Image (cartoon, rainbow, N blue to C red; front, side, top):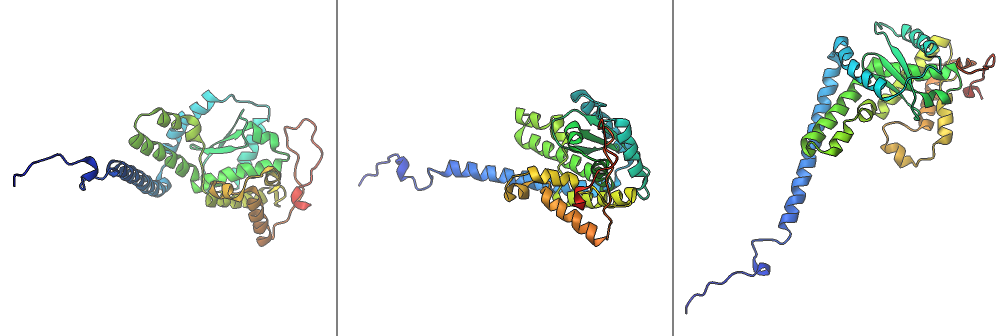
Length: 285
């Protein structure tokens, strides 16, 4: 019997799966994602280790280009009496033990309720947040919260992790337009802290508020108004780095009770045109 060679039909080839190329592509993508995540986590741990040893001079050098970007992209305003806000910040900073760092506040026009702790002791407050402030005590709580991030050096950890994210994205995605859009100032400057860091900064702010005023009046008033406007599902809050305002209020109230802090009257905010002699903290109600 004579052997006759013939081509194997595609559906008869047991050595080649019709889905092998697709499966291999998925495996490669999955491995790349895992590798990128692993690199990011390892570098993040490195950032946490290095941050406590960063000298102030390095931080100040890092601050210069960042603050230039802030000044160039956002219009400053003095409608909220920045000099008086600076005086309040200085008074709070003086009550931090073993503190030699000088802090500077800047107010910028931005339709967002936020404040940022940036390298070099810079605190940037968005005008929309100040529009929502109803007492000096609330402002002091916001400033003290940012000072809490400085004391724990959360601002450097957040900034370092943001840079690492963009570096890893650039390595794995290449010099793409998506990577470039992530590298803009809004992405770099929006330091996202963990919920644990936010709770710790709130606790620090509460203690500093009591040192400054002698009581904790107004500590949770700002969060109380925010909580009344929040309608996001619990899952969204869980995925967010910031705790829900209601949970922050509960934590502040618990700390107030545990430390037997008194709740006193709050002072009027000093940029209002016709402030009353004294306001009442919603914490007292």
